[in-house]
Length: 437
Ligand code: ASP
Ligand code: MG
Image (cartoon, rainbow, N blue to C red; front, side, top):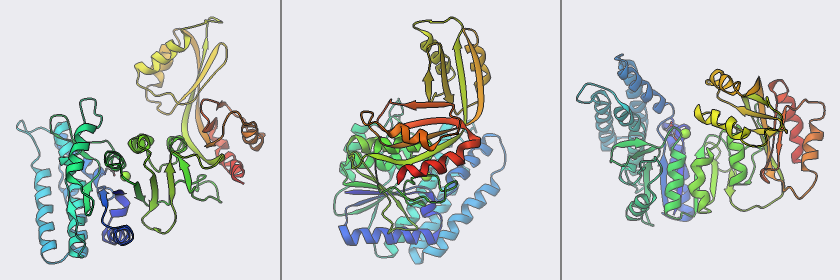
């Protein structure tokens, strides 16, 4: 079995859906009917559904939003479908709209529960239309509702036992299946979801429980870039990368996939391949657990980073200082990213400033605190083992003359992380492009 996931832009309109169909037909021709296709909602629709839910919560009208929703799907149906396939899809669309419009509970309220029902409808209608389109084109396929196998437990983690048992009953080799990303049920059987962008997670979970041969994530980019094409002219997509390296990059700005979403695949050593629906013959990026080569593979940058510098009032407070600091960040649920320390001070970065004032006030009760805003964190990623000298020197040589505010090296064999004033970001990324030649 293979799992292919297509993101919102891949199914954004009828033209794109045709491209997706071609990709599927190609796969079946070459490798047979061993495929599960996971679909996101049409691009922009999940946002629209959240908006509808907000409006309902605030007793505002939803006529405009419903019209946008209806127009979008009517257009796709009109352009893609004929005869009975068209008829059942229009009926289904109307049914979905009814569900949304009449979602309010007994007390005429919109709670989290109703919101989750509303935002699930994007994937449900998108997959229904696409399933019918394939049937119309003579491509046999079975539409399986993700609500019949995808389930999270009380901790909001996938219920692997249940998912695994349901998936092996529902998905059999020899068939093409269409299902929805993102949506699931909670431990009580209520409609829920895996969080924004959750379709990748769906694909990864299905792949893991079925021991799929590979998982392909199809989007509108050809994989992971070695550098940021918005700031650097000569970039290319990386052909092979490990999960560890990809995770470092994903966090630091390469917006291809979220590391936690591929964890199930990584644990089972199932290759994840990033492919471009609009350039299907480009190789894409293959992510595996295999280290195929040493050296730098890519750099990525993230902006709006705040440095918090914390200096102990009492010198040599031998232990407990770090704990006290991190307790404060924990209390405000603010993740800390890069950390560097000296004997009496600690610098760390956060990318969420909303609780900064409270945090600074709290820290100030036992330390002196300085805040520096407008930084960028740059991660130089690859397999750069610590026992091989030279990697750090190469980075620093290339950045000669650029002030570096923080430097983190040695916590893994996969990255060197720098924090600098965002003013220098473009220059730094361009210079670091020489790491790959
Ligand atoms: N449609 C959902 C979202 O926009 C899930 C996904 O696209 O992965 O968040
Ligand atoms: Mg997406």
